[in-house]
Length: 302
Image (cartoon, rainbow, N blue to C red; front, side):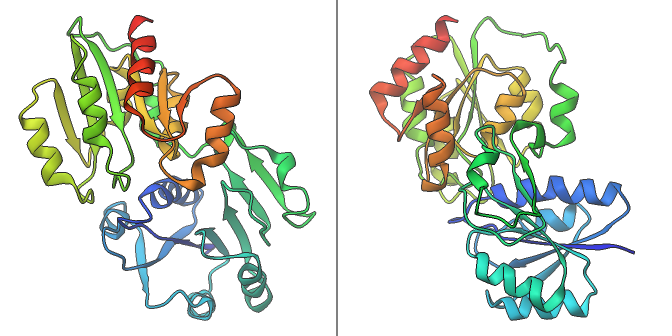
């Protein structure tokens, strides 16, 4: 039996993107008959419980030391290692390969140097040419929107007609599962100035500012708050446009052909921010009240 180990983490600080996209990959491997496992750190605000709920076993690592990971690979007779972790660098990947001769798959979205057999950059901005001299010549590159890791719900709802029950403008709002930049309420304050809108606000129970957010939503009836929802695609399909971080979720919005405003909330979003700006999409380098208001006015007229 072929066995796959996925090395990825999630937390308040890291966010949930690495786990959410590798869960999609894990399900693809499982459909092909592979046994799939996760190896993660037990960080505050992690998604380890969700991984288990999806039917995957989770090995909790005690350290970031790759020797612990190498021992696990050998002990469990793993054939393929998937790495989606910014802290595991080229030299460490090379050492893993040297000691285990494992098939190594790396997920990357910041054009780092990798020692792997397959590299996946599933962002819409991904450019295969930029990996020249960054990966071995034998490395298989999978770059761009055609390789975006999407849950089944998005394929189900992409072309589904959902009748609107209101003449109001529906706005999908999602600034990451943990909203580490803490700008949800700032965005809602901007949207509050507009008439005839509904906001579908999506977040998770790992959001440190959830109590404050729940109170704000309770006092403002134009907002519908969704916590840990499994109806992301359906909510997007019901929406007229989206406001999202320039992160993994942008790939989902793009796939659904939903007009959007993207806000860069972290440095690892620089590449996708530049791509969006160069291609005349509505994108903000950081949250700005006046610029966001201007962008909302543009989309509300469409």
